[in-house]
Image (tube, rainbow, N blue to C red):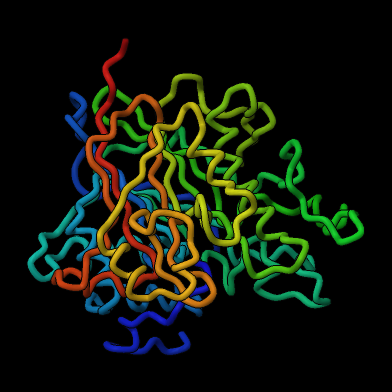
Length: 406
């Protein structure tokens, strides 16, 4: 989510009508876990699907249909790319997890046009901070509303996250950081007023959670190895004032994982079960998500994504597409003023205020070799181009191989 243009798909095919976070869920579909030797390569992907709705329960009703146009196109995109492990951003969370189950059964589990159904035996979803009332006036406008939730949202679970995996998830070892307080991060970039005083009061900071959605460490068994899937969706660094409160939060949400994978810097971290510390030394990981931060353009604070791209434990990948280049030339506008390589863009926004940006990342650790990578953004002369307009983001994927131990 950033400043977006109306989806061309919605205007041409249909209109949306104006359209509680509880315990996490890890469930499997199918038979017992398949274990054995590690595969030659694995495909890991992230996709902000824009499967969010204005009203609680709307997504579930659309899932029940089994024929909703946007959801079918999302499913077809996933079936085309066929990732082994997938993070979905902006997927509304419901307390009984019905939407995720129906998405697999009625959409991914059914052939979409020429694409074959795809099955994920293992899934994970959990509550997020979006739409959860804080009871505080966080935006300082004298009243409470969606912007005063722990993460912007009209109901608990809006803009949620979900993980799909063909490999077993170690559900007993999952760590979530939904309730970690922003003020507990050393040298946190807490916003300031023009006079240099703190923007938030002590009362607010005593309850203010760092994560606008959540941060997850989900261990996945791949043969005899374990991949830690580190996922998040930081707030966009916009929709605020001169104090840049969302820009500050975005930078520190990204920093959280940079610290988490750094043993010397992670001692302050605690999870929702009060277990302290970060990722174990030598553990291999993939960081994935819509980070709402471009390395060169947009309104981020001093390129916070560089905290990950330049981290000595990250094997920074740079997926590209021809479709992104084509659209930058065609749409022009503010895109002509951007400094980054347009081939790296993963999101398509308003051409006059924001432009196209690189916001979505799949970043493996140094224990992996990148075999192949890409952004699903077909050019206009490709039949699959019809699929890209269902979301303002594109699916990003990376094929990985485990490096041989030295």
